[in-house]
Length: 482
Ligand code: GLU
Image (cartoon, rainbow, N blue to C red; front, side, top):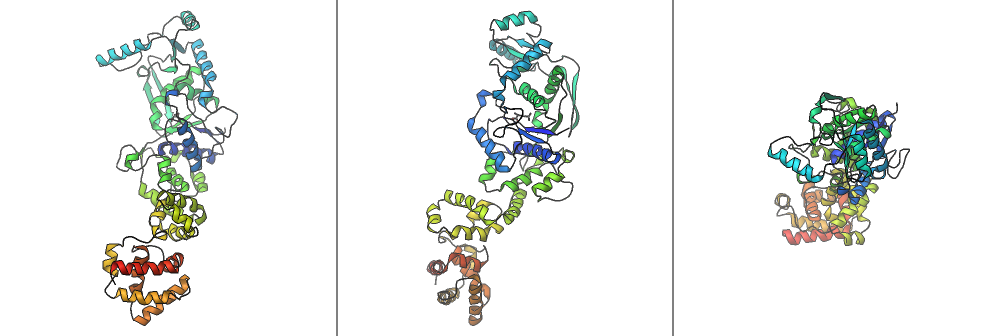
């Protein structure tokens, strides 16, 4: 048996990390088993359809590296992969169930259903369809449909007994049939509901395993009943535990970020987010955390998905991202750093000093946890510092500092401008003056960057170039005294 799994998003909003994690587990499982990963767009809810969401979804899946073997853009043997283009198929299957007596047409008007709901509410009864049309004579039903009477198609759910299925993570789950409504399969506009389209497509596309978020568990007994009605074998179900925000509750933009796009905008690398999401509710069985794609694929197994809800720990994501930044070549970061710098208003500076970008990135990427941190801790590559870290000033800008800085500047006028010669110059000067290395280093860093930390000072000075460094020391002398 070839494993066939799918990610089946409804393009109604952005790609939430929960959805991305589902897609990723499906992808890993398919790659591990030498199977196929499908992307199917569940766009049958026309009222919630959103063209931008579809575009963003495809972009975000690609950005994460979740390529699909069948689906939009790549095609495949079960085309089309958009449910809105498969309406005939669902209609035919609904008709088949009507003919078998497993489904029936419901002609109830929306007025009747509204009144029913109001009555149920008033009497504190559970909401649900009262099965009014369940026993309409089939011939009458056919006649009314042929005459064009508006109707939906409902599943004839057994009124007693129970529906049992096995979930790979939670084990056996059972539902009493009487709590399951006669659910709508086909709506008045001829569009299928999620349930019908999802089951028909999973069968038609020969899906072997359904891996999805556990918010879909209540839908599963209905799906099982549908499989039974069609006489099909259901796939293996595996419902993934929910992802919670660090303090508990739902992950949301308000609590930091929620969508893949948010994390991209916050300066995370796709591989880091990929690695992190893979470890949300799954572990390789040892204490490895930073894992290559290949290692993740090799060690992935459904058995090690943890039943407990997983907490989204952004500190860990940051740490992982920092590790990935170290591995990422400078050149592959340039575009993103440029984009963020432009967003911060540095377009003119970028144009004036094109070669500075590379130096900026190479000196800061290994010290940063996120791409935006590379930008924000290195703005002094682009403009003179306008403030100086107060604590560092108090600590390092002593009464003797101005005089030492003036002597230093004189030397800097003529020294060969590379980091080794600069370092030699500083060493020699500290000896001549009989002071400590730190007495020159810290004030220089403060003067050129305004900060007390940063990349190796001599590499930094080399990158900034002679005139800029000397000018900035003069500026600090004016501003800090001396
Ligand atoms: N269209 C559903 C969603 O938006 C698919 C759920 C499933 O995987 O069955 O998540």
